[in-house]
Image (cartoon, rainbow, N blue to C red; front, side):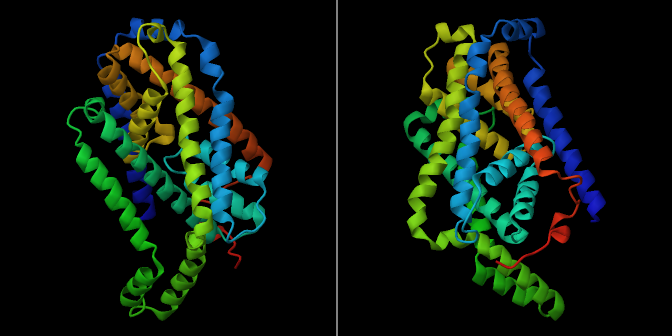
Length: 343
């Protein structure tokens, strides 16, 4: 399959997921009732969480600095935060596009190895999955019936948990040096010694991004920073309950917001779209209906405001930092264009 075909297939699949999830969210919606919900929101409670949203991104940059510490001793928080926000900006344009742009921007700014920095992004995502899985299991222990009802009809909760665990373990094994060395030795080396040497050297640089795993003294800090990130994700969702009139009739607390973050996080992880468009709206709408008995219009209005504020913030701030970086053109094949510096 050529690169062009792969790219077209990827965009086609993303478009199908976005359109399909938006259709599922909108198919039974009373448009006038939805517009009425959106027109009567309290914008104070919609805008006041913005500093906390920014704080969550800043804490993500702090955790990234912790992960990078073994390979880059002196990390500029401004450069880290800049790269994080640029990554979010591109994630809102291309599904997971920011996961490649972010390490490229930072590696260029710090004159570091792109492969090593990119590996830290993979480790970050593994930490996010593990944190989300931990929170999900805790929530499942105490509110199993409510969580099962919150997922779209036909969802198999056990399968979702097993899939998350299996995916995490598989990725960890694939990037475990002895296993990767064995795979390269058995598959690439017999075909081409030159290609084997090139890939081995690249993987050696790549594996440096996981060096923090060899530093147990950083584990507690990483755990605390990971939990803080997701806590700061949940606080704005809690505050935005008060945007709507239904908050006067239904008692909604921080634990409810955390539950919504868990459910939406799993949904967006399984079916990633640019900025979570469509999937986030549908999953949160269903959760609000199933958990709290709200109407589809109320659930979708709540999801829409949450998504809009997050999306707008990431685009505006990310674009500002993108301009700061003075990047005139991002190469299509960053792996080939990035200058590798041995750390």
